[in-house]
Length: 174
Image (tube, rainbow, N blue to C red; front, side):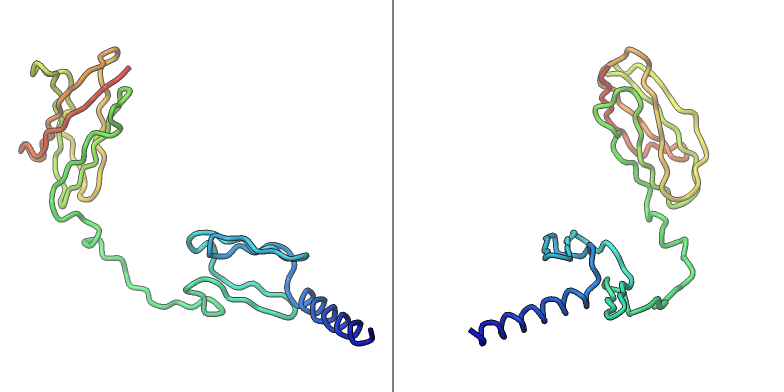
């Protein structure tokens, strides 16, 4: 009997000591699961939710892949704008498709250029256009609004510096 009481007292001592040594409350961590006891809850997330340091009067925890127990700059170089520029002219598909009326095209320009848009119905008749407009180099957006109450299928012709670079289908629903 004394032995059981002694073992129970030791277990109680270690459990209570363990509970006092850790900060109480909730901790968000990686892993996508949940674990808890009487005083702590550990919830997992996908990805790295936080980077930094958590501490109590007894313990400290550095969390996150790039956490070194404090803030440190690993490396910093000035931005190179040419790395962000596209290498070739590209025109994305009409978005959204089908559209309730306004469609957008992603435009990638390696250099500043004039961009225009012409829209035709299935019979080849022009139904809309955007006058040539100067765009800066980089990733831009071209927007066209369909005429009111004109659902249907249209074709768009995109010109960059007066050269046809893309022909895209537009579906408009009302």
